[in-house]
Image 1: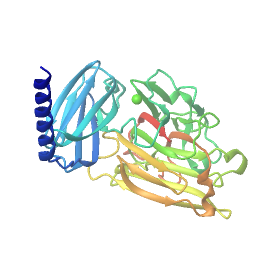
Image 2: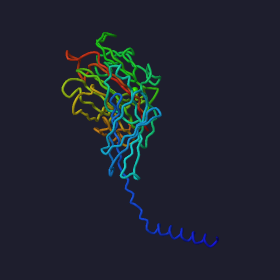
Image 3: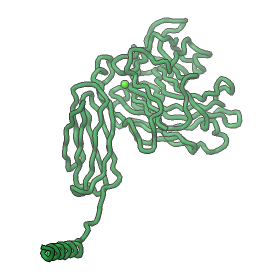
Image 4: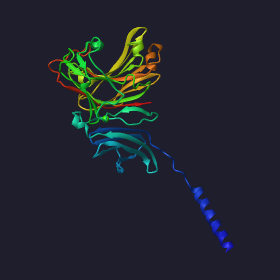
Length: 365
Ligand SMILES: [Ca+2]
């Protein structure tokens, strides 16, 4: 009995060592540079994934405890949801069945936007970025503005410094169907011929640096001037432009390229003089009123970069001492102006009312 056991053990050892000597490890070739882009068209999310060295992809769409897997050689998949909600999709890029990399992206499906008059589709952006934390967001999912916002009303000094023609009132702001709606109307109030709204987070929420994404569909037409922008917290003590201004998105509506072009600009004080630096982004087709787009800045100690739908179109170096404005905290202002020095007045071609729809604003740091 004892002898047999030792023979068995010897045989096992010889077999194991033989296996080890002949084993050739396979080289590990992982995909790299996985890039996942999501586009949401009302109930349907379209996913496009690319990765170097990837031979196939598997997408898993999660929905209320259930999931749907889609395998794709091209990196393209889509899934249609039946209810509004926050969902996620897992993208796995494979070189072979054992060698893969994974990314999970969250997104929002909102089936109620249609009831507001907002366009149904357009670009969207992820709820998370590598290296960033979501520190504040407003998804505008309630029935009123949150306590993070206040209205600015009236016509300001010299039409808010620009000879603008609108009278701002809180009555032109609505939050419903998951979107903020700021509407410019042709109606008399406070000695002006137009009304609109201007909201801000001054004294309530402000930030220094970060990635900011704002998903919005814009109004259109001659004399319509929607803006998603920021001012330095210290404006009340140092004034403008020493406080600094970051225009994340401005559009001067009207025919030709106007309704299809947005501007991203920084303003500051250069030894007491107003200085500004900006550039613009023009759509290849259609206008900004047709569907939602995501207007972003990526802002750090070195500079500010402006993006539309994650495409960079302007960058400023803020390291020179004259641009120290941009090393301080800034608050948000969202408004739709009518007329003013830059856009000029509405004309017979301008249709009222005009609404800017904002699906969300998110700050990542
Ligand atoms: Ca929303």
